[in-house]
Length: 158
Image (tube, rainbow, N blue to C red; front, side, top):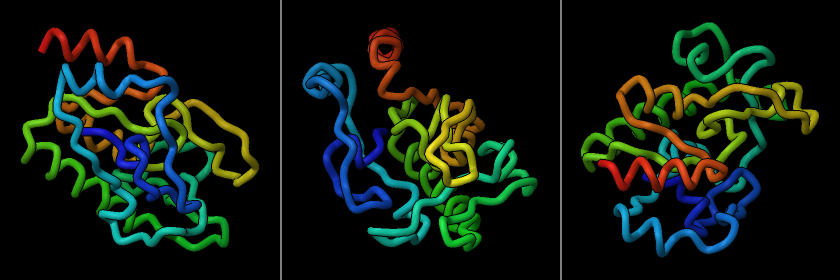
């Protein structure tokens, strides 16, 4: 499974895509089927939409456990949409027999190592998003675009 925005689909909050650096897609396609998915769209959020961040000091695990919220720039609580999108991502990934996911970094859904601070100030911090947490709980390995080499090695072994 791969974040739809990384395949050029204009599904990000700002209505844009976020293409992978270089041209790794042909190599990845030789190793695995690239199945696009956007958890934020699956959760019912529109394109474009107000940018959202997980509350400061928390990560996707906390959102799934009910200890934290996802708030958009206006302060609107969009937690339910993020949880629904994460649950749908897991259901979809399992239905497609996905064992690995390549998700965009820093997103409150898809970030696997880095999130925005939660203050809507452009700063980043260590953490992972709601969908990443849900996929990992389901036993699906999640990689960021910065980990393409590791993903390719993992796919080559599976």
